[in-house]
Length: 320
Length: 320
Picture 1: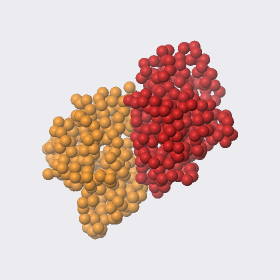
Picture 2: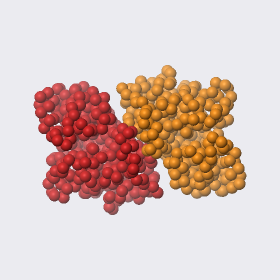
Picture 3: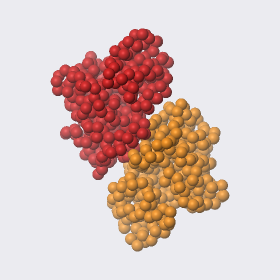
């Protein structure tokens, strides 16, 4: 069973490789939300999202002489591509054919080979296993692996180290790796931190799975939060989150758009839809009983100017 | 004559009032530019730009019982509005009628009264003097005042404190207050730091004035860099910059657009056109003989999503 010791070991291995990302504050945000908010900005992480932590950590501990392979909606693909470059091995990334062009270009920019698939008809995991077997490559899965989870947990480790007396962590949930890693890190630090996950309304597989007490599979979610479009939780991540997560809230695509605009215009930071989900949950008042100090993970910022403007064009605004 | 002691005194007065803004790094940027670049991010300053430093510093040392008044293309107006709110006095801000709506809304959001004028026909300083006299208010000028200059100099003080061995500072130049303050701070710290100012091509009043050895007045500059559209340098700022600045380079509006897109897509930070000018000078290779470590002031980030997308729509991109 993964414990905070594994997350601490991951932090040691990642030292000097990942950025220790800044924790941003905003008086406007605090006033709007009515409590002190601390934003852990993984959009400033290498390759633009928290994913590089888990990907590098897992890759650095795996046999990899023939290279690394993964399937990903984008950020994990970039992360594996960068990890492979850092480790000096080739990478293959299976990527949905409708993934944002900027994500594909960035993945290729790190030197990886991109193999497209159809998000709505293909089974990316079967495709990945077949290709990996053929080339003798090692698969770095996007979330359901202990080394990936331990790597993602370093986000919470750094945040709890930087900020005292946090009463709650609010964390985006896709496949659940970031949430699981952060929950393990937080539970190891203090048992009384409330762990709240955030999913898009159309992709609330973890919320439904927790309610059902077992993994539930949705139709492929259609949401602007492409990083949170996993139809079902991972087995390992779900087991951890079932034990350690206090609640899941959901946000609408409009909540995400408004949070992205708020981040742009008031915080001056670029956040992609999935990356904005935890901030959106706070701004749209989706969370009850906020403590005096809340930590929020801003998980990624990979989006191009055109797509950002298209999404935020009709968004509502938050003001005082 | 202003010295680094004045800047240090300003820093003491501003402690706890202004943000000590982060210094961002980017491996991609370093590779593109070919040297180590340190970005002092004043777009994360309160009210979204470095202007709050000088405005608060000057306002806090002035008689102000009847309130504060200023004329500004935007950021200084917001800064004075926020400073007045912090100091508990009213504020009037004369603002060009074509200033971005987000700047006007933000200024009013801080509780100031906005009085519009026509940038191309009115003399904002005469209007300002008349209104200030009528209401008994104190004018906080945007750049040509020793307390404003000393306040802006705290940007360089913090940067030089955070980063060792900087060989050059690259600083946006509008009226010249930020440049003058930074040059005083740098000269006090070490005499061998090259100070390079950056102006938009269409608003190169300081470059021309330095070449002429006296203040030159341009036609009202038409550039997307609305924060650098001053037609002539300040008297005080020009005297300081004449003594301490090593060179001025200019950037095109296209250079600014491309730098804004780079900041958005690669750095994940929102920068307004004027705020991107020093970064643009580096990215567009406008500066010769770069040393091993360069400090760059990113001076502001006040721009709304729509205007940003409109400006960056046809920008070129930088890639490796």
